[in-house]
Length: 226
Ligand SMILES: Nc1ncnc2c1ncn2[C@@H]1O[C@H](COP(=O)(O)OP(=O)(O)OP(=O)(O)O)[C@@H](O)[C@H]1O
Image (tube, rainbow, N blue to C red; front, side):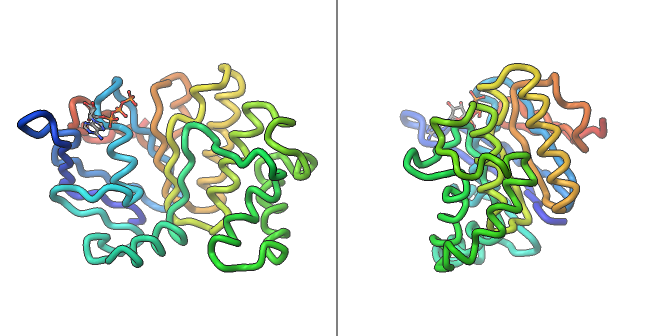
């Protein structure tokens, strides 16, 4: 099992009390499979992603990434885990305006203390994998919304993560482009053997995913195969 949440509970301060955002949530995402997490606004989807990304520690329960129980890691250990094992695709691409598509990816190597020049072949290979090899020299303003989202996905794969966490990747795209991005995520998940979690409001593209988990009021219903 590559990503495992075991009875994870997360609360936030709420006036004098606490609001339970995740209530004993358990979820297993095996390598090479894609799980969609669906649910209404405010149900806890982003909280689930943040806990899986180790950006927020749960009040109780375990988050296990690639066999490592994250509770046992200090701050440096968590940073290393996030950098090497976890790829995160945020809803907004957050690309740096001055950099080309290839450079957006090379920055990831630079942040990891490696040479950006040495990382160029991998950056180009990943841009090819998302169908953008010919646009590697373009800056964000020269790309469409769907193309920027593809750069975002390629960037998340730069350090070869075992867990890929994706937040609402299709929300800014029309139906056709949304379907194409979901197809791409499915292909990359299978080819690169990532354990992928995709948070989405949009149930129209769910046919291709391996499991669908539903969240309501912080509770996750047992995933059903589709
Ligand atoms: N930092 C915070 N402090 C307090 N309450 C929060 C915080 N973040 C989220 N919440 C609350 O926790 C609950 C779950 O929020 P979460 O963002 O995980 O839902 P969501 O399913 O991702 O919603 P959406 O689909 O609208 O993005 C909501 O009731 C929300 O108001």
